[in-house]
Amino acid sequence: MKAENGILTLHTLHWADEIRDPKKEIDNLPGKAKASEKELRMAEQLIEALSMTWDPEQFHDTFQEKVAALIKAKKTGESVEKAEPAARATGAVDLMEALRASVERARSPKDTQGKATASGTTPGKRSPKKRIRSTPKARDLASLTKADLYQRAAAAGIPGRSAMTHDQLVDALAGSARRRS
Image 1 (cartoon, one colour):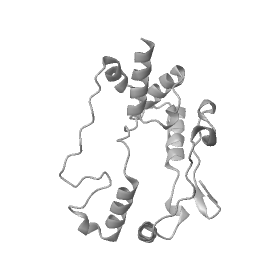
Image 2 (tube, one colour):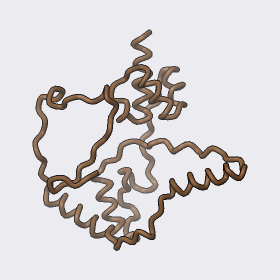
Image 3 (cartoon, helix red, strand yellow):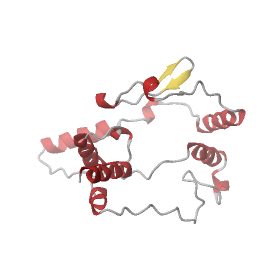
């Protein structure tokens, strides 16, 4: 991420076979977007609520510390166990709703009972169930990790795989298997 022309820009790196010229792919690219006054006020409130004085001594590179501890343990002959796999992504979040909920939580943490959460549900209400995959192939794929699915998608030549979620990779791989048979 970097500041560029008065805005923050974020670049996602893709594999070479996934990079395309957007002007050739999309007929009507949108121009510059203008935020509404309400969106700007909400963003300012969130920034103010989450602002703090920055003390670099309070922050540590925990990943580097864990790796150093593992190396030290290996040197002394201790057994090193594998870490738990990372939690699966829960799906997309409505960013405006998440921002609104975050502003509400930052404004007064005691007043958030009964208000919508970042997932868009109110406490105590159940979220809608995910659809159940119908093919045996998809059920088998769903038990794999995202990294394993990504490797299979790369081998199958599935475009756009680096931006896909676990479930999207399962669907894409199951679909490519159906097309081959």
